[in-house]
Length: 107
Image (cartoon, rainbow, N blue to C red; front, side):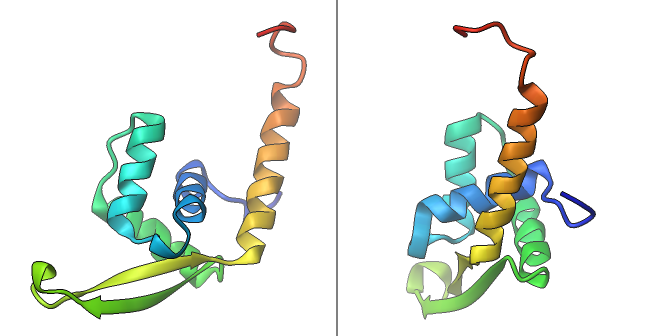
């Protein structure tokens, strides 16, 4: 893990997007993070993280169809790149390594 390592919030966004698959857009990402972590997440925070991840090549996006309930505005869907999964695994392994020996067995 180096300078390009993933931050905690980026990890949450990527994991939610992975879980959602082809239905990954901002609102369900927010809902998934909130449901699983109890954190209040803003649209802006998720958009900023997704833009940053897209610039790094860790997600790609596409526009969906326009919908009347969104005032004719299309949803932007996100897909997680294979490199992101690799970086997520590295982050998980590093955290598990740091936790090793700090918790008593059986917890």
